[in-house]
Image 1 (tube, rainbow, N blue to C red):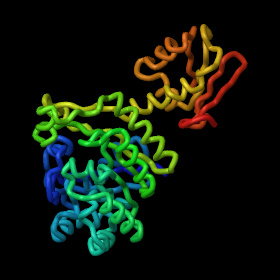
Image 2 (cartoon, rainbow, N blue to C red; image 1 turned 135 degrees about the vertical axis):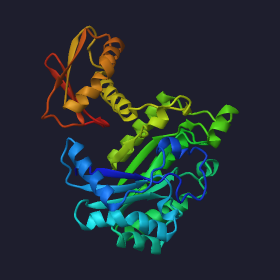
Image 3 (tube, helix red, strand yellow; image 1 turned 90 degrees about the vertical axis):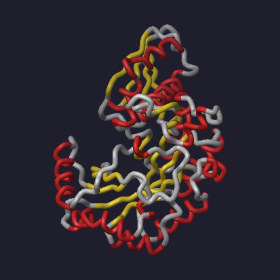
Image 4 (cartoon, helix red, strand yellow; image 1 turned 60 degrees about the horizontal axis):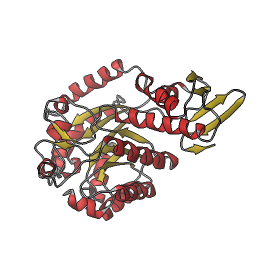
Length: 352
């Protein structure tokens, strides 16, 4: 299914019962704006449709930031009213909200359904209780499990937001989070690196030497493994990285952490490079020119930025040259290697 066109409405901090250790939504969501009227929202939808290069079959209004269902019912209704009007007029095909796992019960779920909400994204962040406690989340893994089950029973599409590199989280803990997330079978996942933003408790811990963020290389490895687990389970990762804002680009906004404006591209390059190395391993390719064939996107990821990844492969395997051919008919997850009259193929996550 094509990705929907998302019309975002940001409600920073609204409804949040506490401040998480890492959170500065003034930086991650931008300056707070008043919620749009029905007229303004309709204009935003039409503008979004006009600007997109693709022609989405589905347009959705999404409420991000804060804790939507932590607001009182009157405030939720006021925010949803213009979105519901657009839904009933057929301007959009869905409404989604994001919230905490401990802020939604059966009554709230029914209220959301009556207002036209079909997707609920849950800010789980981790599925290890010790990590949740050290991150001052204020909820447990059991809350996440219970809420996802409740939403599924009532027919909602569900999403999980997960973070990499939280306080108290090592590689084994993150792998356990991924394993448990796969078991919950959400309809989508978002993966975000933990960054140290100014004005947060995490910034204080970082300055005191009590928190060390993940390196970019370790983040790439963790993301690559997580992406493999979710894709193999048929769970799309709809975001990998953070949404850059002007506030995030300001000097001193990000104190530390694996910040990269194109983290997913770096992860995809890493996967493509691993596929190529897997094909080359053990083959008599020294001093020979080889040819990789792939679909356009995979070919671009294999080349890397300014063909840096091809140069690395040439050096690591002592090759005379590396060429890449683009084949639009090739499956997007298959890489083909040709050496002389020999051809080898591999899939995205292992041999075919």
